[in-house]
Length: 397
Ligand code: CTP
Image 1 (spheres, rainbow, N blue to C red):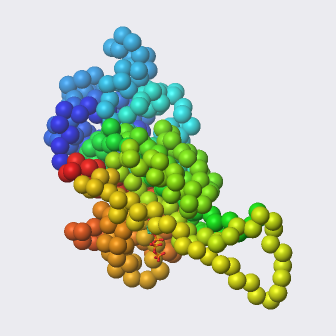
Image 2: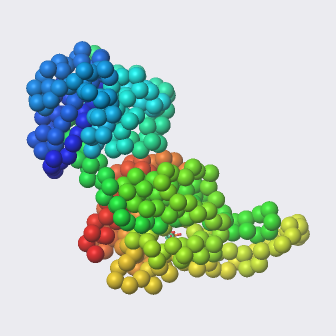
Image 3: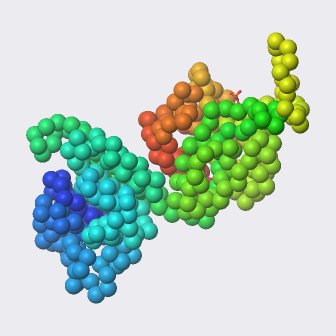
């Protein structure tokens, strides 16, 4: 994989893994990246700035007040960078970065930057296991940062455990993927649906389902971060709208169908993560239903299948259509049937016990070419895998 002529800033933190930053810089250069290095004061104690300056043929910045920068070092570096990788990212750097601190050149450059950022954490397993560390990571991920590692293995202390920095080649791979994804959906419009639909029975009761909307919000967040114009049609959920996403709130399947049909003409791709109710009440009572006899039957009528409607109506494969399938048995077979019946390009399928609620999911991607089982990943990482497929489908059409 190549990083041809991409401008990469490597930020070196203060941990013993800093020695691997030298190899990382070499690896990035082997992939034809143009590399500049910045270090924290602690980082410069672990590995010599002279070594890294020699490798990059450029001064290494360790100081916000560096006289070699006529302007401000952090402003210049952040404007120059097409991506930043922090390796090693110590617990201290993660903590400071997650709170937007800017008290050294590495932190100030991060806060000033607008480009993708990759953290390669390295620390003692006890520091890695702390709740505070994970809260900091969650905050950074929420701001769009990407992580590689750490991994389990022998540590400088002679112990074994989780906290070892990923190998330079692995960090370079993660960075290459990150750079390839940056801005790759620019100029595209993506319509995403998310959450449940709620079908009212009377003014206080409804039929709903357990969808939280997290998967759809993750897809919307990543699509927007990758440059797409995103319209997110959301059922009733309690999630914050991701940055740069236009959100339209709906309640019922019929409302969702109407809003989708209004926006679909402008969409290059539609990702239907919503758990649309298949049925609604034949009549919605205007007054609260009163308790009656031992049993109660509710008359339900079928809702339109929004995705199948889009599949039936589309011409020349536009827009690209992605469906989601939640199954409780034989996930791949159920997904394949939906792929064919709804005439879509791709189905993301998971087992009902995996998908709901949490931040992670395990799924299979099913398309005409076959099944791709995916390892357990965060919903944000899964969103990137789906969007890679969407991008490839868009460029092939
Ligand atoms: N879907 C839709 N409109 C509906 C029902 C589902 O657009 N009325 C979409 C969902 O957003 C999802 C896909 O179809 O992308 C599959 O949804 P799922 O509920 O798993 O499939 P159903 O067709 O409803 O099949 P079943 O519930 O019988 O498994």
